[in-house]
Image (cartoon, rainbow, N blue to C red; front, top):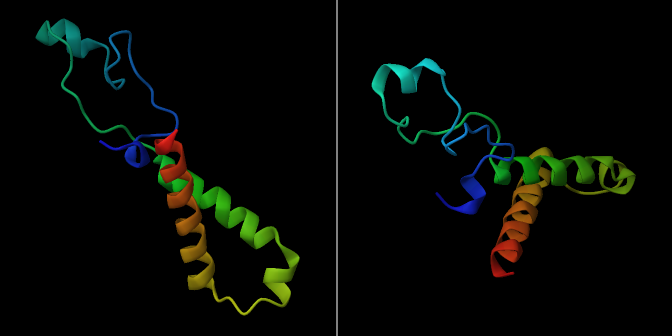
Length: 89
């Protein structure tokens, strides 16, 4: 799983596995299998925050020639660039 697809706030148990029913370990006597966690990925979160900034800009809302699709695409590009820069550090 790459960094962009990891959850922003993973919930894990003491062994570092995604949280699930505490009876799992008792019933199966071993750690739970790795599984996908629920919630926003880092990419989704960063795109949402970028879109929030874009939409809060009065100029882009009143005078910009950007439709909703263009604004969403811009937010996704910003999120992808941020993740790329974070990977490079």
